[in-house]
Image (cartoon, rainbow, N blue to C red; front, side, top):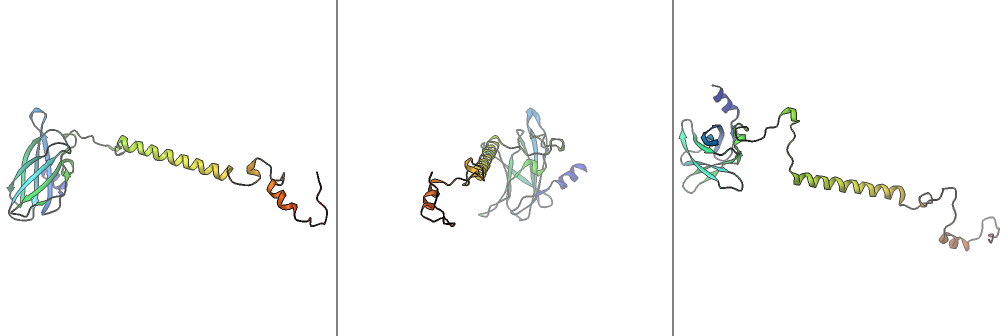
Length: 195
């Protein structure tokens, strides 16, 4: 009764002409895992197969037998691994495939497949690959350098007497300002002092 309830809770819709799919697993001899696959098929007629795929490895194709209630199912022994499963309905010239799902998504115990399980105590953090982590550090360093350059420009790089190392009240005319003021008369009519 508990197994049926668990299978109903873990049923996953897989798309295409297929309804919900489930999988269960149990230990098998020689370190293998016995997987039972079951999928609902909406369309009548044809043969149903399951492709068990380990990226970078050979795929294993298993024919599923017809069961009561419009379902197909079968058993397969695999090495402990969270394989990707794609169901396929084979009919005369009208083949259809399901969306890819993993064995864990279909309900197989992750520990049975040797998959690390995140617990609430670990914070539930997703594992991040080293390559992604390296790019994260590069982005952080680039952001810090950009902010540093912005601060240097805003606080010390712009024009103004205080920014050139002089006090604001100790303003002496710059050489280009002296030339510009040499040709204009003093508003009080006094001659400029020669020094």
